[in-house]
Image (cartoon, rainbow, N blue to C red; front, side):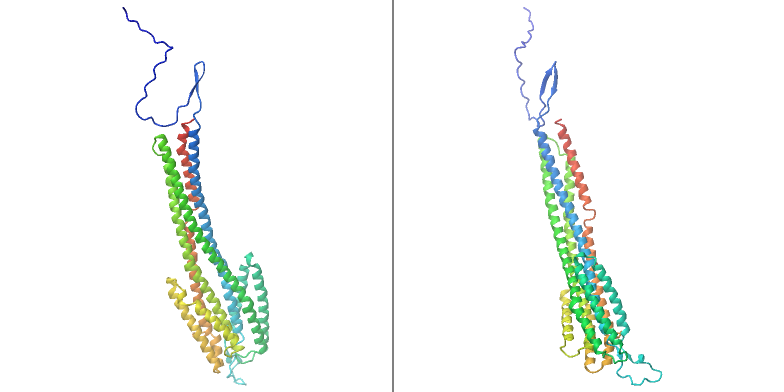
Length: 486
């Protein structure tokens, strides 16, 4: 009997293949096959759930990068503009207003001193042969006239510059109106004084003295308070700008650090999910995007904190000492203005001029106190300022003593002549030292604000470009995963 090969019955299904041992890698399931007809097959699209999951992960990573970019860019814009605003407010507005206050006070001092010079009490009734009246003149009227002319030009220029601020237009117009009345009164005073050219020193005509006192009242009751309000208003605005710039820098540092940590967490989690689901190593593109986010977050936080320190130092070592010194310079000039009117108007102890001078010098004592000055590199210059102030006070005491003891000619020389031990020279030296030290602190403010701004050099373009590239890397890293579902 021969053995015949029996063909399997096609009606009987073949036994199922045994499952292979070992774990099966996860991944996108194969697309189901559909028989179309005539033996032709076509593949239907795979399930949409994995694609949606990839899409949500991509959106999550892009949103995290966008939040970090927004924090870095917005912080850079706000901090840089805040530092610029602080510098501009001080150098272009506050310094101009402080200069106006000093120029007005010194203008009044010079116009008051114009009435003091005259002929010596020792001049004989009949001039000796070969001698002129000028040989017996006491005091330096020319110096006061030239300085007054210079200060008046400065006042006009400073008012013109301040008039560019629309917020202070009304106050500047009021200053111009008051200055017109002041000029009229001082001009009339000078005209009356010229009617008595041959008069003793320190004894101008009563009408000239009255008009000069009226002009001084306009200056001290209207012009100087208005200029002081301008200067103090700009100083407060500058202090507010410093506080806001410092707060913005600190806020930007925290926002950049927070969004940076969040972005790193999102990017790390999404990479872990992708690696776990597809059994693949981490994507190089996504790793590069993560590194870019980490760099922007770290550098941004450090840069913003450094900018905050720079703004704080600018306010501490620049703005505050400058404001005190600028005020001291103006107060000193105002005190000097009371000396000339005291000399020709009312030399009694306890008079209004004496009380005003004592109040102004008490304010100077406070402004120039060593305890109120903490900038170590400027201590030597500050001591020089205090030494100049002491010489100014010594000259004033000597001038008053000379006047009280009847040595009028000597008192006039002390009040109006140039030279060491004379008020014009020692006040000029004192005011110059004040101005130099104030300018030094103004330079410190400009340097520190520029340093704070330079900490963010290249921003916001740098973080925007880096994080924009990181977003492209996210797309490049996810593109192969999306391609598997096509």
